[in-house]
Length: 192
Image 1: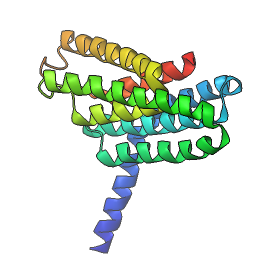
Image 2 (image 1 turned 90 degrees about the vertical axis):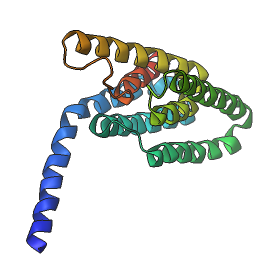
Image 3 (image 1 turned 90 degrees about the horizontal axis):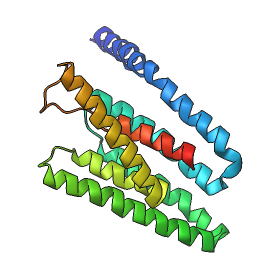
Image 4 (image 1 turned 30 degrees about the horizontal axis):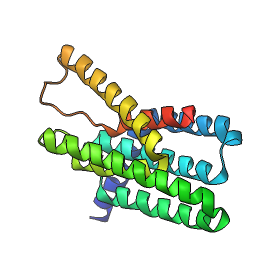
């Protein structure tokens, strides 16, 4: 019995690592974008961008594998945002209040618009995507949430259309949205 468990663990380790390797380049691109923009960004913004790139990467991988975004990941994103914002309130109160307001607008807009699509499309969009986009809005603010949503959803729609035309998926099939939103996050970070 122990041998089977060990084999199972080895199989999980072997199969668990291999599927992630092709996607590692996406995280490297995000890190490169941060390095390029590091001189232009404040320490708080740089920290927020680093956190959203890491969380976004994790969400994209999980969404590719399971076609869902777990609540625990969204809660971790929100908790990390609160922890990263707290010291900023004491260092630069005026600038942080502006950033906090922009973040809350991003949260409401990103989550609100996706919630509207979720309701109107009769769950054509996943509930995890709604919560994920709301938490992305915390990190990127209102304009960043708009850019991320626009780029991510357009890329997802174009990819879905190509896959339908190639008859690889049907019209009712679902594709994971988080990887496309992650590309939108990368574009947003690059444009900032």
